[in-house]
Image 1: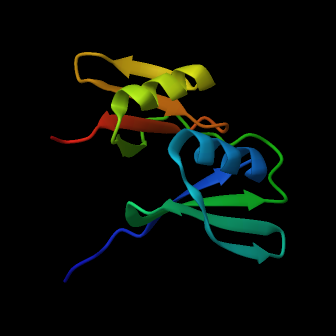
Image 2: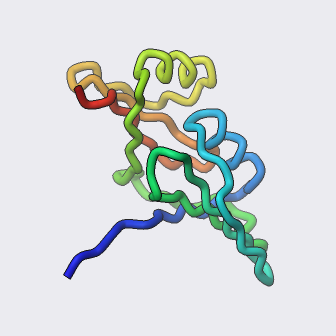
Length: 121
């Protein structure tokens, strides 16, 4: 039996702000949307993979989401690691760097951590 990963969900407080962040920081754009009664789900993606990030906005959830200790993350491989680092540095969203491993993390408007790794050679 085989399984294919298709998406990961993050619940967000401000859908427009999150979508703008993901487009600027990682080049993700809206692929599809579900407008429901009291919720909106937007699937973001790009041309490099079929995998999508699902952003869910809930009308009746005004408080920030409790992300625990943020001991989870979604990783992105950067074709131009140095240019990505420069962009994220300018955006002020780098929250942790591991120079020994050659990676860093950015955080989105809701505090989710996203790992950025260099392309494999």
